[in-house]
Length: 319
Figure: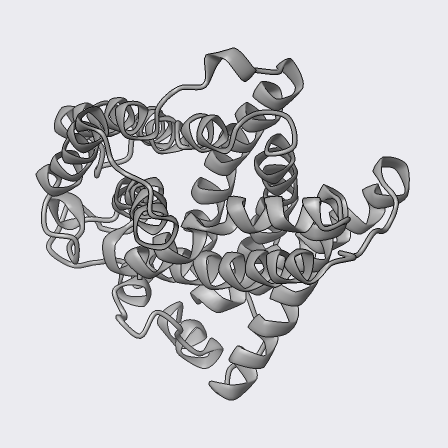
């Protein structure tokens, strides 16, 4: 699921640029994108026979994560207007390393020295693979990209906490509702509504909406399988997929330095263990009672590889 998320998210910045060049703007794109994600998630939940029930604690955390998600989108996609896409991606993808630091500070059992070294190596590899465009930097763009990276940490940590007692789709639904409301309230003060005026612009808008929705849902629903820390580590392959996309579709070439960077990232990801497993047998969110061999109810819920436990199952698990 993390690989699916990576494929979907990798092309979003390029689609966003098409939407902007076609006459739309950042706030219009991200607000409508969140609204469409809410609708798509609801349709998916209904088709799977799920309800919107969620425990109060998870609901609150999901809504707070949604506010952070709105800010993250504004920073990530807004930065594309001011600095080159490769620099936006590089700065934004400092968030896996930041998640690793946050996990260590929170006492995350999945975080250890090997993982921290892997996160650091992956970020260095991304720098080599993506490259630097120092001649076209802009303070506004740098701040927006950094804002996207920092708030992404809050989204990942918060949603992982919320999913201790709720299914992935339910958390994603309320997070997107919160993000949509946040953006709608800010919209009149920050922008004017502008839809794309060209075919290419609409293609870009659709690409942002579909890619972001698939990427977000797949990424969040991967947490119960591989854990939030491991999922974030694997997500480092997103920029690499963007490079491969450029080679296959646009006919671009890859330099020796880029190949070295790609190799570093892949080696870092592989060094943390098989992709389908959690590091050290946990997901790092303390749902495993290390004082015994028995997992807590939260761990039982999250170890369900269907990822999308029904509300009745969740209530029963919590007694």
